[in-house]
Length: 263
Image 1 (cartoon, rainbow, N blue to C red):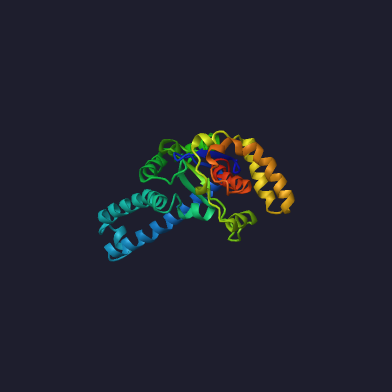
Image 2 (tube, rainbow, N blue to C red):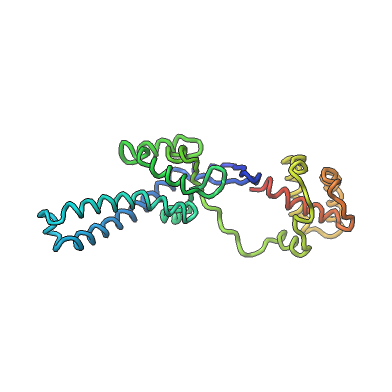
């Protein structure tokens, strides 16, 4: 379950793919977060007891009990809900526990979680925790095809694994494209152009651009000619600058289709 992936099409028509966070990683993050909350609550309660009473003993004898009890309830409420809401909204869907486990909460459309969604999912946490030990939430996460608890369903959110940081070392293909000084803005394509290309076309183009880096000039030219005959006719109305080689047109096309097909 930890390895299940979800494809998302954003409102900007960008295809993304996320690895869904399963019950194990979410439970571990939850335990860490609640350990932090409980420890913080304990420190605050002890501070309040000492601040509003002459001694801890006097508190138990009734001196200042009502005031401290009311403040403790408020502190517990704020920590239990404010911790998750504020961290998720201001820290990109991460709490401390989620950050340690490498997971985060996002909207189902791939965008960062909104303040309203964070408020909704965390207040519905009360129902997810029923009847005890998060029974409802655990059952739903285990059974739901997107590993959602009730709070996620209500707020329209999902919990996913963070993408692995890319190596700072530039890949050969990226270096090759940079050396040519190419950017996708050179080739203007509309959505109807992109829809002409199938996944089979993408695989062909992807294989081509990764191979040309290591090919000798003659072999590269032959392969370019073969691939050009298949793919370039679909965008021939946009190929206006004859000074640009077919190889460069194919690379430019790759830069466009990469956003559509490569997760």
